[in-house]
Image 1 (cartoon, one colour):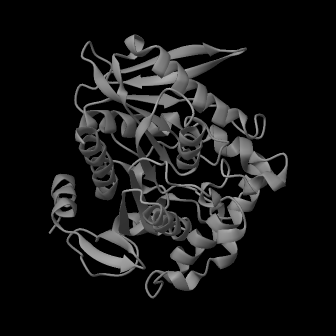
Image 2 (tube, rainbow, N blue to C red):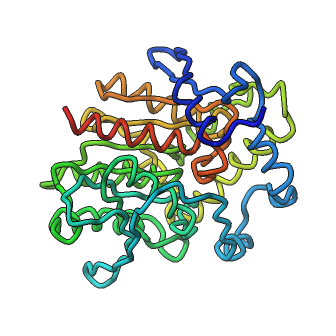
Length: 355
């Protein structure tokens, strides 16, 4: 039996198991047509085994910076139909910020500001183009991708400021985007989730409001606090142990490199704009979709963050995708879980707007 991508995605929509971690309800998305199995999804295992250089799966170092930036590996497909893509630049203060606009038409729509991942140092919008187009289609919204400034040339808080200023510009110029400023949301993957939480915090005293946040395998703690409590025993590595262990440890150790790359003052790691997990008051956050991957080092801090949201009275819809690794959404069209995760984010956003 070789199910099609559509059949695999439909299976994910139809089959979900619920589990509890403390007070947190976790919606578990099993490997389609292999529900109950352990280890990596066969598509992830094949990619890690055959398409990734095994010598390249090690903690990042400064010498890797330019090599990583020059390597553009899209590894995804366009699942959208007729979604228009445009580019523009906005001028703020003494600089210009490039934007990628998806699904702008003459019809006024909601808007989702998309903040890409890439460790604060990679230009990832090429990789995220198809994800943004699919998200725009599923949410029937305009999606605005931000080409924020990158570390280490532009460390904290330059990139975050670019994302914030983009939010301000969109709010002040809705006619340029054909959007409804009362229907704004933020979506971020990996470190983009970190930036999205920062933009929402910086916007609290401003006239605009983000009604929703979509988090795709986000980095919510860059400090050592969650790293010290992390333990590989949190993961079931009874199958595919070598590959899983390598992925987890590589990610764990790479965060130290990202920390030094992003911050000129390492004490800033405890600021809530850098480590949102440490944000004392989470009561003013909007409804959130939290997407996590079973074999992602960041899953544990994502679960802790969702538990804190519940304690603060913030509605959170928390998913765990079994057999997946970090940033699996980037394999849209290859991993059915990527399409399903985008659908869940789009669906929750539209639900929130109806309330």
